[in-house]
Image (cartoon, rainbow, N blue to C red; front, side, top):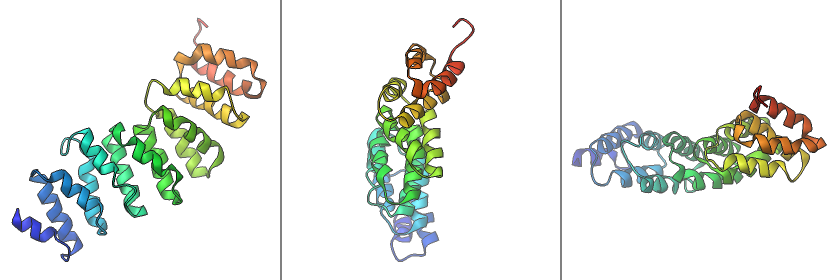
Length: 219
C-alpha cells in the first residue's frame, strides 16, 4: 500500500498517479471512499477519470452515504470534471445524487447543463418535472432534446400526476409540453385526467395525440 501511496502522490506523472489510485481503490482499504472524494477534487483529469469509474460501480463503494459524498463534490469541481462526475453519478443510478445534480440545472456552462438534464432522467424525481418542461420549451435545441428524453424516463410514481398538474395551468406551450411528456411516458394511469383536458382548446390537439397512445379499443 505504501508503494501505491507514493506513486499516487502529487508530483508523479498523471498516468502513474491514475494507475496507482486504481490499485489503492481495488485493494478496498478502509479509506476507499475518502480516496475517491479526494481524487474528485484533484486538478489531474486522469485521476478524476479513474475516480469517476469507481463511482459508477456501486459494488465497489456501496451505500447512499457514499453517493451523497460524491455528489457533494459536484459544485467544487471544474466544469469538465463536473460533467464527468454528473455522468458517473447518473450511471451509478442512486437517486440520492438527484438534489445535488439538480442544482446544476442553472449552471452558466451549457455542457454542465446538458449533462445535468440528461442525468435527471435517471436519478431525478417529480420535483424536476417543471424545470424539465420549461427547458424543453425555452432552451437551445440540444437542451430541449435532453429535457424531452429525461421527461420520458423521469422515475417516480409522482411524476405523471405532476405532469397533469402542469398541463392544467400556465402558458399554453408549457401545458402542451407536459401533455407531450405524458404521451412519451405512455401514461395509461392518467387516462381519465387526459380526457378532462379535452375541453381546453389550446392544447386539445396534443391531448388527442396522448389519448391515441394511452387508450385501447375498450375506450
